Amino acid sequence: MKKCCLSKAFTMIELMVSIFITITIIASFYKLYNASVRTERSSSIRVAVNLLGEQILDTLAESIRLVGLNSAKADYLANTSGGTEGIIRYAGEQRFIYLSPFGSPITKVASVSGDYPNCTFTLFNSAAFNLGVTKLYFHNQDGFFKTSSMSVGTYSNEGVVVTTSGFDSGSYSGKTCKKVFPVGSLVTGENFIYTLEYTKTTGNSLKLSYEKDGDSSQKGVLVDFSYNPSSKNSYSMPKFVLEYLIETCDGIGSCVTTWQTPKGGNILSDEDIKGIVAVRFGFVLLSRKDRVSGGGNTDTNGLPTYCIFPDKNAVENYYCYQLPSFNYTASVFRRVVYLSNYRFLKDQAQE
Image (cartoon, rainbow, N blue to C red; front, top):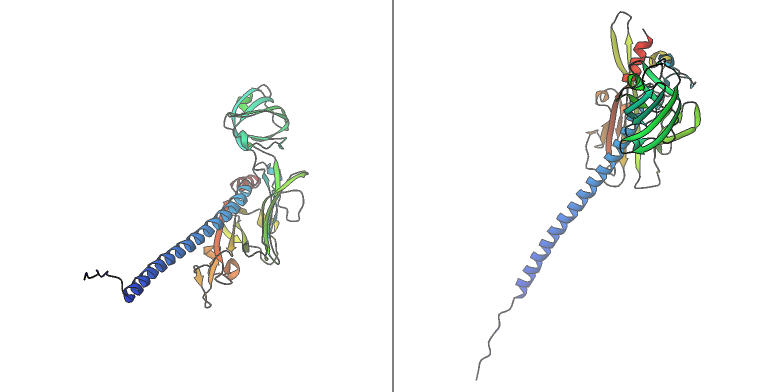
């Protein structure tokens, strides 16, 4: 009788061991995958917060950087009462009102022909030219000159063609336009009044609005950041600080500069405004989209504290913000803007 061949099989113990090893490997890979997803999510949130914060910083800085660029020396009149004169109209704790040219266009002369004041200009950056602009400021070594009559012609890769037939001031009769406004001369739009204001009530908001000087029909908003407490994924700005670098002199050539913040809803005096040489601002931006692992300086509660200006860390908590819980992602943003044009006007006004 023929014997049947016996086949070798896995024992129950071997099967259980192999299943355990397989589960362990799968669990390890899942844990690694989950950690990678969380890291990617956290990085994406950080990038999104940084992009938003830098966008706000750049927009605020660009409007402040050209303070007083188009203003005559006679306009150097500090005015904290909200009047219609002065380059800096209001300088407070959470509010700053100032005169500055509109952001479009700020360009240069690419080519010019004709005899003054009947000039034909080609300006660079035609894509950024604002069709609402009806007057332009042309700058040269003698100052700036505002067009009293102009027309906008064709657009091309080389720029936009602008034809002028008159300026509000300037006595260049008999000279060519190229002699008066050589290639490379600065050209800006008209003066606009900017209002930067931060409010904190049930939520918080930061707004930068503008209005054409002398024409309230032309206005708009460049920054409109607002926080909705009911949205769990929204960004918030719980802390915003605005400071002014003020120079004071003793009359014999010795001058000192100090950063000042008019706290408690106060505003700077006219005399202080005349000494402003720079403005700095900063804020804390929060996101509720993910947890944070700490960072910053921790207090006795273990919650991190974020200070906007490092030189004010040890002074007082006015410049710092303590994270309410670890369920937030926090970032600090700051920028210093030196008012070189405004400072030049100040020095000229004191001569």
